[in-house]
Image 1: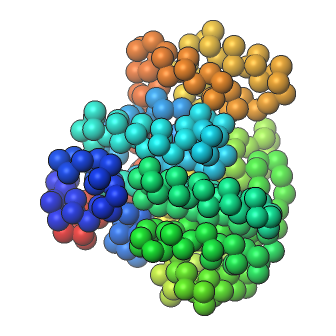
Image 2: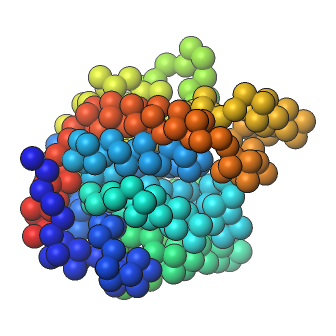
Length: 361
């Protein structure tokens, strides 16, 4: 039987979150650091959902409530920048959307809201300042977890940039994910992260007073939809070696690019130190299947005319997407619920909400 959220657990919500939600709210939006402190030694994975189209969110929450699972909701810099990114959801919009659904659906299982892939693709002041401004906006909105991704840069620059950007996150004691070894999009090749790189990265951060909770690596996974016929290769042995090398510093592995990965393989991830698994494109695919046919055709035509990926249509068509008929919203919610149930079970996450509640009570 699922344990109810206690007042002691709710009292551990960050103060800025309580200010945003109101003291009477029972929404259990926690710091990812607290959640991972309880789960880091359990062979389970928190499902982190990049919800580019909002209608999937209540389905994911319904599955998490039914299976008593911790989940996370997240947007990357490209998806949810200050200008709304390509989804049309700035940090404030995303926070109010997720917590609004939680209030509306009486979703009281523990979860966190994560600033995914706060990317810094070069060493320019402009690029670094853009990331700094996004972190400030996400903190102001109420996010409770952050991923700084300067993996595009050489290791010393990655350490330096990550250290600088992490300061406001560390000062508040909020959960931090960092990345070494750039994770490419489907169809692109990249070098796998080595154990030596991972150790040097974590050691360099630690020497600067930065102690991350999660490490994202390139272990062969890709972002986005896999190309037809593309072989899915994830080096779990390398992943496990990296985990063993960094776990003494309290670091677990964050797995990116899970869409399209067979569930029987996903089920093995937790054995290799993976404690957070990102699922993004899968929710976009679910939403697209449930949108009205005429709207989807309009979006496809826009993508063709502008030579853009279909995901980029989320922003210019956001108003139409948000206001689709109720039967389409229900169709998307139900499909998201079914997909989330299967993923939560594959992630071995059933019952993790009660484990966290007990561990924090």
